[in-house]
Length: 381
Ligand SMILES: Nc1ncnc2c1ncn2[C@@H]1O[C@H](COP(=O)(O)OP(=O)(O)O)[C@@H](O)[C@H]1O
Ligand SMILES: [Mg+2]
Image (cartoon, rainbow, N blue to C red):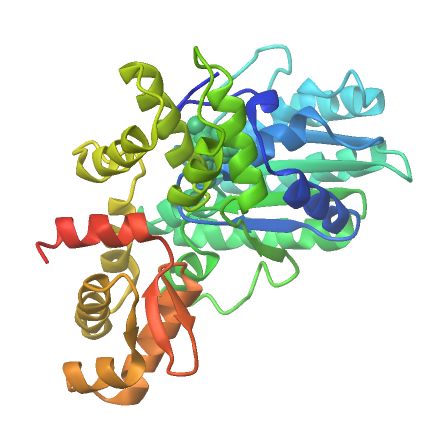
């Protein structure tokens, strides 16, 4: 199925076997944070992991985007644990008991509960305790919480920072206390950004320092070519032999770009390199921003202090002009700014997946050329 952007079924998730094996391996001993910019394929990876868990692993997925409070989080957790009671029979009666005590019925699916703050904490602890107890010694329950950082960022922004902090601490405590529970936490914005927001509210803990943070890479050449091949095989006719490789290369391994390229070939009926280039150009020009590249620009304003923001934007503007990148010495000279400040801003941008540093002369360039091209257009450069 060629599907640029929609939720894709697990079997249509191609080229992620290596990452998935790696994440399951880590999950044997530790919870995992999956970080990457939007649309790079985090949710798709989770879906495939969910569909093919290893033996004795019970995966449960929940998208946290849009949840309004810790209370709602716990209520959804109660629903989700309820869904697995068929497997974890012991949980059922005991969780029913707990929920019963709070006056929450288990047989009302999607029930919106209004728990007092003290109640959600107790219920959270008890639910996770029960899940752990009900899981056999050699088994694991893995909670995939998609858009985890977005949820906590939203809480913090909406004046519920206190609640966010308590919930983060409770989840961390649960990871310490319950050896048969793991969490996969995904985020398009960094945990660091959320932490910074919470620190402004006086939060001093590091509630995810026990989580193994993984940056989800773009597809490698083999994975990208494989995805391209699968999508090309769905088109009528026989595509040129080298076209899958060309798509892999021009997409830079961005799975959604590959989907869009395939879709454009399908729509136009012309299966050639010119159409692939056309698809790329179209993606950059499209006002609806299918790759959500504007997120890169907007998020800077959300988490950078004003003095750093201007420098950071100027650096990106300067670097965007040259596909080969710009050497550090030139950046410092051109901007006429303190070298240390420039370096700090650049390194932050590297950590946040905007830029790469290459070569002995410290050349800095955009990690994704499609982002660079979009940036030039958007910023009128
Ligand atoms: N491994 C993959 N195989 C095929 N298509 C993919 C893959 N990863 C991502 N995609 C495509 O990219 C889109 C965005 O991926 P998604 O997993 O939603 O990204 P994220 O969760 O990081 O925002 C998907 O809807 C799908 O069209
Ligand atoms: Mg996602």
